[in-house]
Image (cartoon, rainbow, N blue to C red; front, side):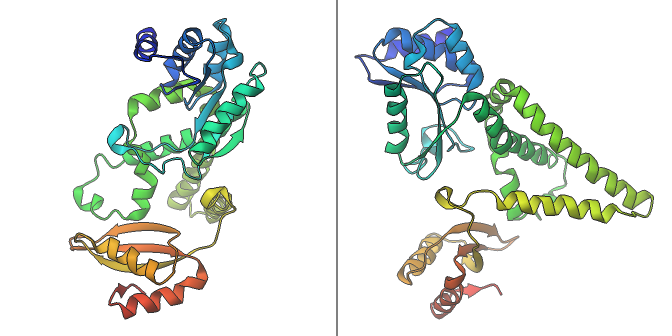
Length: 319
């Protein structure tokens, strides 16, 4: 950790106004303290996904923490490195700003300005509240995706070949860096453990219901399964929609797309020419065929005009 902090501070020349520490949780505090010491006039923030442990270490260091304001842009991807960078990564995404009691108003304002400058929506939270929130909406979902994906390791190829968009959606983030996520989970262990206990209780209920169906005729078991699934509907309905707005009801138009260069671009162009906005997109690859299915989400009022226009232009639609 010390070597990383030294490298960071040694490579920078001049006197920056703001220092952004982008380091894993286990070394973030060390780098923050080093930056506070080297640049006594700079505001320092970090973007680690765990906040309380970093804050405690910074406060315990004795450094001038009045210029430190933690933050966390909720805009990560499953791929890392410059090749995976995107100019719109932060657009409309939440950026949590995590001041502490000693943070100056000027430092808080400066960190807020960074977030808004890249198009993010600022949320202010204390460190402990942030960690509890991300345990539920980020850290445990990562574990869930990894656990489901791990179950595919010994599955026959004939079975894996049947995978559709649902499995891809559930396991997408399972491709994330295991080393980084080990540090994140360890840094937020108390909150992650508490959420996982809730998940375990629900999984235990489902397993018990399935055992009853298999072994004892299943009296009452269907009710348990239904309650779990209905609770999932309610939870899903609370997930914010685009740009943090309330969830919107979209409808899907399924279009068969040839697996050849330019096909998707042509489809999007035809939609744009028709004045129809694409709200969301899923791609389903055809099993053993040189085509895919683009599942296009649009507002309900656009469904029939879109279907009519695409049919006129020669696109094949799924009913």
